Length: 250
Ligand code: 13P
Image 1 (tube, rainbow, N blue to C red):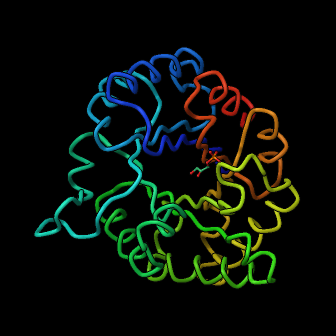
Image 2 (cartoon, helix red, strand yellow):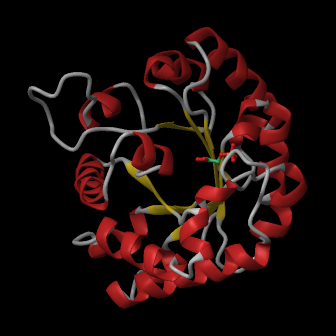
C-alpha cells in the first residue's frame, strides 16, 4: 500500500513572513498534517528557515524546488543538498518542466541531481511530462519513457525512496487538467517503465499527478490505481484549497 503524498510547489512566491503565515493556516486546515496523507510544502530557498520554524511540531514535510549536484565549489548562485539538509529540508523537487524549459535542465543533470539528493538522504520528487506539441505529434510515450529511464538511471536500488511527479506541461498553470483517464494511462506507463528497470521496487514508487490540480478534480485523479498523490502549484498557495486537496487524497 503506497501512502498518498500531496506536495505544494510554491514556485517563486512568498516572502519569509508570508510563508510563515501560509504555513500557520495550512497547519490549522490539515490537523498539522497528521491526516493519513503525507503533506509537504516546497518553498523558495529564501523562505526555508522561516518555513522550518513555522512547521516545528507538525507532521508537514519541508521541501526545496531545486539543488545542485555538487557538494560544494565554484558554482555561483547554486545550493547543495547538504545546505538544504542543514536547514531541515527533507524533500527536493528535481527536473520541474519550468527548469527544463527556462533553465536548460536536461535528463543528464536531473540524473546527477537525483543521485546527489539520494546520497544526502533527501526525498527527491522527480518531475516528468510531455509538452502539448509532443502529445499532439504522438511522441508522448517516447518522451515519458526516455525521461524516466534517463533521469533515474543507476538509481534502481533506491526506487522506493523516489517520488515521481507526472506533470503534462500543457496542464501546468493553464487550468487545463489531464482527465483522470489520460493521467492514469501515463502513470501506468511510468510504472511499467520502472518495472523494466527494477521489478521488485516499481510497485513501491509513488507517482504524483501535477498540472492544474484543484479540489474539484483531485478526488477523481487520486482515485486512479497508479495516481498516488499530487504536486500542486497555484492551488497550494491558498490554505483552504490545498487542505481540500489533501482531504481528497485520504
Ligand atoms: P499548477 O497546479 O499551478 O498547474 O502547477 C502545477 C505544477 O507545476 C506543480 O509543480
